[in-house]
Image (cartoon, rainbow, N blue to C red; front, side, top):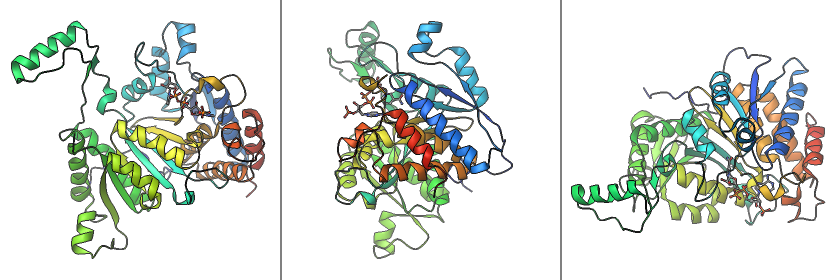
Length: 408
Ligand code: NAP
């Protein structure tokens, strides 16, 4: 029997739903204080429309990021962490991370603290978006990015630090390995248990949502014992724990004359650089992509560009006990406070959260209204600049999405 993950699979939760659950929200930095209220008003309108006012989310604000530093002297106050732990659901705006200096990423810290190990990022084309592809409707992917391992564990030292001098001496004496004297060093770790649990999450998602394939993205030819191991461990889970549901590419060639048997999910792998070109050339050949942390981050933005813009991508960070829902994009600081930012990514994240709560009707109403608005050319500047559409402000676009809820 496969060791079941508790990570949501997109199929909705079972049992009688709480009709007035508390959900936390954090505005975050940059455009966050504009897009989070937009998403909340869309979610509320969809819930009201789908359940005739019989269900309602009780929103509770927590403060993290720059606002928290201003008010409480730290960007991630203990009280906010405790509230997330006890409430379990968080709709989060983007958080700024300084480059090359300053505090570590709060996003990474939150994911680590709450063990939100599965970053799930659906990427689908909406009619009306300006894509660089000739056939963008072929793009319908779900990226499963491991969220707690890899270079994001933040184990690194500046080139001229005392600690790194000690480390250089240690590896030289004990392991006979020479580290450049003027190089900063970071440690990449990829662990078996973390690889196995994200693999289970991806395959279970694929089974429940009747997806065609799961592609393991790695750079195992170069990083043999980290990314190469990710590949091996992922295949191991697939063929040992999900034998009756999956078939590998090798088996398809050797046993099935190149055709995936009906009802089976194809499990294959691609070296990371090739994955990028394959995705651009033949996006329709890819379905669920399973990747370690860094690869998953890179491929998400590239996939976002294929459907027109990362501004439309939502995501879920899931663990066994809590879920954090956030747009794929960052703070987009240059647009902050100008009523320009595209709130679609966080609106879609709100729909993913509703799906996780089992409120599928409301989730689907949001997706349809966003689709309908974009198709009608009712879009924000980031999308309108590539088409003949007149750009709407964040607030006007939000009103347009709400107006379309429940209208087919
Ligand atoms: P970014 O904030 O996503 O912005 C990159 C570009 O994407 C923008 O210049 C803009 O493109 C476009 N864009 C992103 N979101 C948009 C929106 N909602 N509406 C319209 N256009 C949007 O990425 P970044 O500049 O690399 O990162 C900025 C900060 O955000 C960094 O501190 C980074 O660490 C942080 N970040 C946080 C998260 C998170 O909280 N989960 C994720 C990623 C990055 P154009 O210039 O072409 O208009």
